Image (cartoon, rainbow over all chains, first blue to last red; front, side):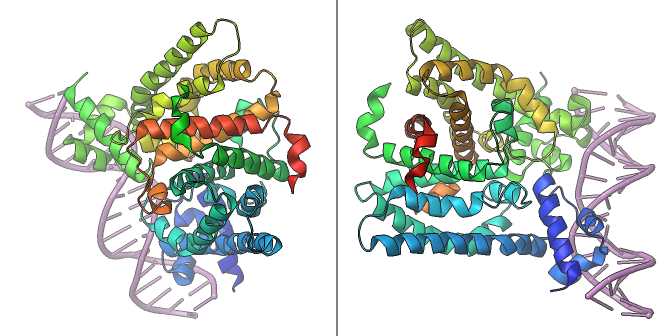
Length: 212
Length: 212
DNA sequence: GTCTATAGTACGATAGAC
DNA sequence: GTCTATCGTACTATAGAC
């Protein structure tokens, strides 16, 4: 792959993350990459083609690592029940540990909230296998849990995760700078603990809706 | 307030929510509102002025309701410990129950993730009082909890909430349409239960980080 | 594979009549 | 308070030389 192509991908990843997809012009990207305006059209055909390539370059490895960790957990526990925290960690750790220095994090965090239909195709293409495998795994980890509660819990978990990936400026504001966003292992563990406890708490929810 | 001004606000709220802030042109807004291009400049001075007005119109009432519910809870329990679920409900319910028909929901959901510095000023202006009051309330609900864990938990809770506000298309995809996003009371209760359990689970976390 | 040059369109903002 | 008309700028995409 040409050097120019990679420089464009790097610049696009950073600028898309900082300014959003629609607010980032191809001019700004080629300028930051030290490339010519026409290079994007040559290498990626269009702005959408570039966006697709930016996501594809990072999502593949992250999802591969997720599935590897899940494979390891399933191999370890045979056909028995899977520990919820282990499944959750396989889902959470590979993306959290991209690290705060990765320019891809804000894009990962906005993957589900960026407007436009185009990103949906990216999600469908890249997340299908992960969604299937982890849905099965969560059911093996919480066999007594009704499917509906599990769907809600997975939805909430993805929300926490996306919000955390997008950025920790809000966390620094909330904590007046006392929480350390660079501690990726701590973040991953906190998400695993919080989401696992939250997921378990939804079991048999209707009976508990009377708390108020 | 003039009729045109309100029609512009309604159209802007809807289009900003559907397409994002930077991808929505003032032309599209005035066209949808049946107003003249120049009307936005007359009423709101600029695109940023319009965005500010769109947020201000909805954030005020939501945050007022949050504080009212918190006031009621504090009045009920005197100077004692506050029930965590009650504080959480005061924070969550007023925004969740905007209802899926409210065009403001996606904007609320992207409030923390839309790129650009301008929205930060909106947040600072409108969320300061809520942040102060609820930080104190959560500490009263979980007096034994270290501040740091509480900040993390609040951060995660805001993430779940924002993600849920933004839209439930992902939830419908996950659940194959079997979860009902129109059941706002059910959503609010699920968030309250999930986030409260998650928050409690973070207490004394370091000792439990050895699970893996 | 990289460049220059440009077509064709859309943008935010404003001036000035009514 | 609402209109028409327009300025100046920025955009994506492409054609065609090298």
